[in-house]
Image (cartoon, rainbow, N blue to C red; front, side):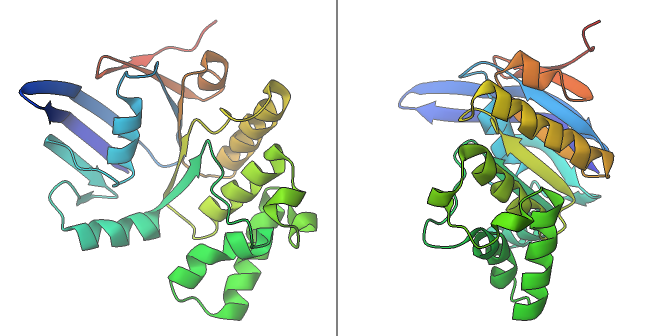
Length: 225
């Protein structure tokens, strides 16, 4: 469903050329649970932004659900991103004045979904991540782990083809982070396709597939024994 071929990303900093991605190849099939592990500066955030259609490669080919997206207009890329990709971030990015239900419902409002239908789908998404009983709570009334669950519900509410999680446990204590990875595993078991970007080897190796990025080059790894 997602295929990157010879993806390169180069920036110019004054007279200097910086090669951030160096010929990345990656294929993610429907139902995969993939980690991309790398240290700070390895290129993993740039790769995530390209996969999420937030940035464009300097060269190479990227197809999503059979559609070549590398050369699409910004408006078309934005439409595909909104319809097909869910995002989970290290910082939860919940709007503080909105309840959990309202935060989860927001992407559907942007898509002009009807109020009743948006509410029904938002409640179902909160139920899916075990947060139905906190629907009326605002972010400051929730723990960090609960806020991340709400953020995951928001990523899922539109029925995306793929969910991209960028350091989803980075702001959490180890126990809560483990709970979130457990939730990802449950969602993947239900058929959700997930790509998790992380610097944490324990998180990376909880995923079914493991890749490692270093100096802009990506390689597939085998699971530890």
